[in-house]
Length: 165
Image 1 (tube, rainbow, N blue to C red):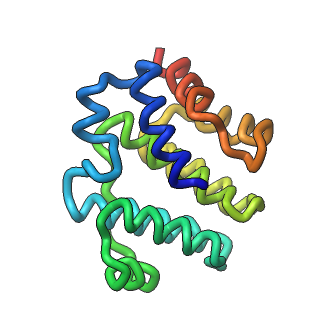
Image 2: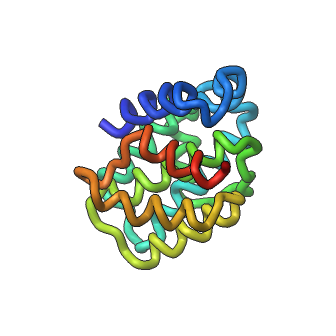
């Protein structure tokens, strides 16, 4: 369910004009990520985030493994990342940063629970990526208005679009 949603998100982020389609094709799509190190960084950051509440449940593991498959990361490598962290590389483009933030929001909500430590960590990750603080806050607020706290792509895009204009 969540991975299909990410595919839809990728389409919508290009459709709503947050980025141009060239940038979408070159940097945003999961399979188009530049380097293997960047892919490992994406997963490592997500795994560390999932462990913020000191537990990695089956739904989180399955979601993370699905992202790993989409990134072309083998199961052995993925499983090794569960025990060690690689250097985090901040995504280069605005679109990649928004996509990574969105992945983390989906991951946080996959178990339908938000712990204060997860919310704080997600907020700090967003700030560390250079996302607008007010957009981060708005996303964390409006997610409660949607079933399973899955913000529709057009809503998320419009939030960031408004804060970048």
